[in-house]
Length: 341
Image (cartoon, rainbow, N blue to C red):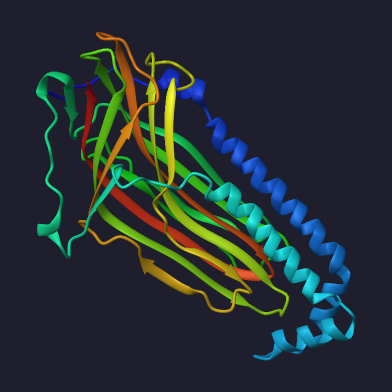
């Protein structure tokens, strides 16, 4: 078996050609379109000037949200229709956010620390057809990033954990909006990973096996609501991307497999009345092993480039709800094995 980790070529030209990942840009545009359409529907039921008048009529204090509801009802606002629009907006966002989130039982193995002796045995692939890569990795790739917030919102922390020496990857992101308008968003995404060369032993698909160990995985959504018609939708999640490039400097992978819910994270919606806050999603030291098979075969003797990365994503759509949202997500890519059959 070959164990690889020696320096390779730089990926600067590849980074320049890829730029901001097209799928990420498409999804960001679609999110904006959905949020704008929902805001227009809401304003048709509750115009901005009427909402402002209702807010000004409610006195300061703990009962303000109930006063605002009573005032809205007095003015004839159709609160039932408003809630219907809010729920349908959530459904449209769900289609975008969680469209590809299924791992089969053979693709993802979770090895929890509370039951270490129950871990499935690891079967080493035949040495003649496999290459194992371990830290230090030669080439790290900060593949995609989005850091956006509207209104009074901001993404104040946006740090990558990518460190080829130790095989570390992940992101620390912190966003907030403590004075949200009727249609504000926070949208932050970072994807980074490692690129390795694999020479095919046979003409066949590639089986990519990745062993990842959690270093820290803490997610937070904290909300507060002041108005009875308030609404929000927010979530955090980590996905895994595996791609194979025919040539090192190709602008588009020949094949790619992206799974959104490697770590499902937090998923919250409602009127924003006290969402729970920080949670440890995965315990430090927990291991997750992935097995992903390419959908195409590659010729024997051809050297292709395999990428494995983690995509961290947090999003909030706010209608008069204050939010603090964050992800502290770091993993070690302990090993990456490429096998041709």
